[in-house]
Image 1: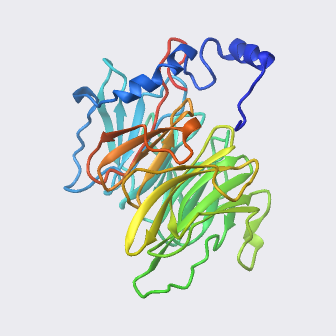
Image 2: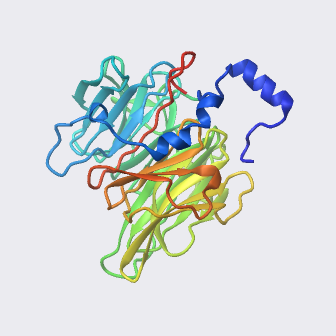
Length: 379
């Protein structure tokens, strides 16, 4: 199910190509032991990293390098626009080894290129920026949004093309190799008004535009928006083989997933490596209280209802989620109870979290890295 390979021939072929480890870098003997490890999961003092941030400031975006052999490099971005690099390899260069100012405003999101040490940051200064992470040099400034840029995602198997979503309700597509003029890069495609501004039913409601974007495959972008204290829970899939730039009216997605119940929107979207399972962090508001849930949708069957629901964590709109490299565990951070939660995905229907570990209050960022093996340090 969900695109996994099955059968004797597939198993032999996978073992020949990937060796004793599976395609996510996790050995079969290790996979069965992960449950017992997670049940006793703790964060030791050696795995803590103290950051010189302002009082009450927390990391907004984190991410591990995706280049094989460099999965121990962790990037952390914050409210003040700083970018920090950490070495998380045990008994090596443990700790922060680089820091610089990336933006003059808050950095909402970061995304590593899938094939090289290049990263894109999305900021409240209305721009996205591309960085050479080995030299920390700025490679380009991408300008076109009129409000804070909230999310960024590289195109599947592409090291130059990426998309961004912003509070201006627009989704823009960029290419780091072209459309450079006047010191800035311009978008090569755009979805204007992708998440239209609904009419507020109460004076205190405000609309946050497009809060998250992610590529499902080379031709499909998944997006979600939010409206504080209001219903705006539709997740949309866009076929980027179309030229949405020419649309004069509200663009029509190729498919939509409605969020169950009254929803104020999504704060995080994750797609597995097969492009089949979509995870969406949604916040529900009813009777002046909030409740959060993670919904899993099947992007192949396109069923409008979620196939699994993850609940049991604290309520907060800024809940971020990530899949483990083996894609059998879902990790979230950001609930108001200052904890991180882990679920085992195959048994997640109406599931309670498998483990909750303490975190700093209102911690929002979350990331996962591969388990190191002799043949493969990074999945």
